[in-house]
Amino acid sequence: MKAGLQSAKGGNHCEEFAENSLLHFSISEVLFPFQYGFAPKGSSVILYSDKEYRKYQFFVQPDWPGGIYASPTLAGSRSGAVIASCWAAMMYFGQDGYVQSTRKIVSTARYIAQELRKINGIYVLGDPQVSVVAIASHDFNIFRLSDALADTGFSLNPLQFPSSIHLCCTLLHTHPGAADNFIKEVKKAVTEIMKDPKAKCGGIGAIYGMAQSIPDRSMVSEIAGLFLEACYSTKDPEPDKPDKANGKTNGKVGKANGKH
Image (tube, rainbow, N blue to C red; front, side, top):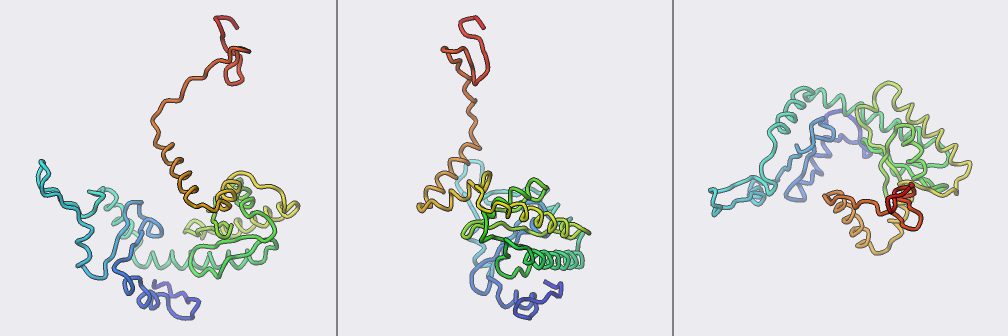
């Protein structure tokens, strides 16, 4: 907030935050120290415009046989290690450290956006002002670029409506040569893709392309829910059943009737 960066409106980000903070329009705002505060996940903080609203997040069970149970949130207690790690990170970097990292990250993101605009075949969405740069293409399936960059070690997040991918700049991208290396790999990948821009897309592109084309969004939600259910499944996989006709199991020669 105090990095001294100019916003698209020409004003100061700190002043605009004070004027446009969600706390002026709603009862609360959430901060995520784990994103750019270098703290571990689980250290998110919720701010209320009035402490009167805070009581609605409390959970109290006065009739529990184990005694009166009161917790500041529905989630129950929080790990002291997470809180201590968050505090340690904030003490280590301090205000000056965060201001410097903010300046580096924002400057790098704007530089990357500027250079990506020079590459034929892709375009930058909007006018990135902070740390996220999203790109799309009118010429080819943008998810092909995502797959190509993944092979070089750059993992970009796929987006939909419209189909696009984005890079979330962090302090790692501000290291000398990191941004230029990323831009170089994008140029190389786009040049290769433009040799056959209408080629089919596999991998994540095929999944996102299919999901976007389904008009009933409840189906997409249901499929995603089934995926999550599968992640929590504790069912043992069923043993392979031999094919009695050719004595094979999953394409491999196995034993059938005690003979090979």
